[in-house]
View: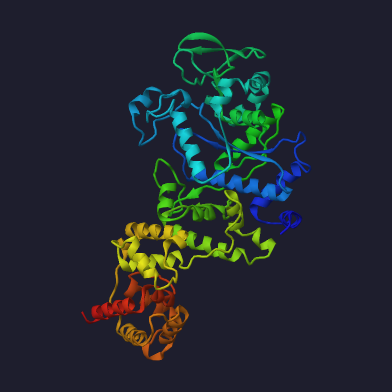
Length: 534
């Protein structure tokens, strides 16, 4: 594949990262006028720890960044992970130590509150460090920038001066969007109290815009104070616009709940002499009941949970698909995401270039690596692995699972199959926590018992190394026999799943029998027939 062929295919691709990258190409058909890199940004609020929302925004932005690089033949880019750590602490998060200390610091900038974990300079520094560890864990390429760094160093003083200079115009954007009561006290600029150190939500009077001097009331006293050098911060929507102008942001995506903010911040950026960046507005996550995920409800799914029962690649695959559609985010979606990821990865190497660019795995392999890995396969699907572990029981061990995998894999060495080895641990955890407690093997009906007996007779004559396809054919043939009175093959397979595996759904039985072994499968059948007699 040549660069020219990739560029040509990328320019007509309908994959969403390329559609997003094409917006930037229209904005900068010959690159940025000053030759600087196109700047991508993601935002993070350090009042809590990084979570799946943080991951998805950095991942999706990285996918667009890599698509833009492919589209342009390697035009320079940067990705900034920005922390809003000058925000005032609004409430004490759950499950954080030293809650009483945090309560005493409500209202102060997050970067000026002691670290409740007692490991960093401030609460924000602690969470910023966790953010960087989090992003490094997934090998993202990024630059970390914080609001406190920009404010305190004076690097954004020129934009703050612009806020005061264009104060009335900015108020003209914001005031119509606010409730009447809020309008009375709203100010784009939030001074930091010299007395309490808190971020103040108070009206201000501009004394000298050029010098950055404002007047405001603080605990009954009139204060004159410069807003430069970290002595003030901006309201959220104004701050967002200022950041776009200050850093020169060209692309930033956000959730649907910030649609209005994008509009207003874009107007303010224009007032400041800048330009609203390109970006994607994505849909939010839902729980298994279709309700919006809420931290306070605790109805979401943490990234630690996903990585306990699935893989980073499967999470990336799930987040890649249809970002403009609402997604359910719960434990039950993980197994399918794992297997679909590997299905797309296996077919990637044989696809034509235009199909590759529409394959999620093509994008994911480039998000944090060099794109290698196309065509890799798993010798056993995650679904089949879960069925094996389900039969082995909640107390199954890693070594025990691998001993059964020997029926299916010739070079029985976990070191030769690191991806599968990781999935064994995921399957054991998923089975222990979510499958084993629900399994219940029922007794077969009389016709089902006769069919199971016929299957047992076939297996009695089969060699242990009989191919899975041949075993599947035998299972099919039994289900078709009129003497067993199945209305359709679906009823026969459901009977196999419910009587042998304890579940209403299951794998291709030929593959399962080959994996589990013929003798152990005959034992399952014998146990089912014993239940029928009992």
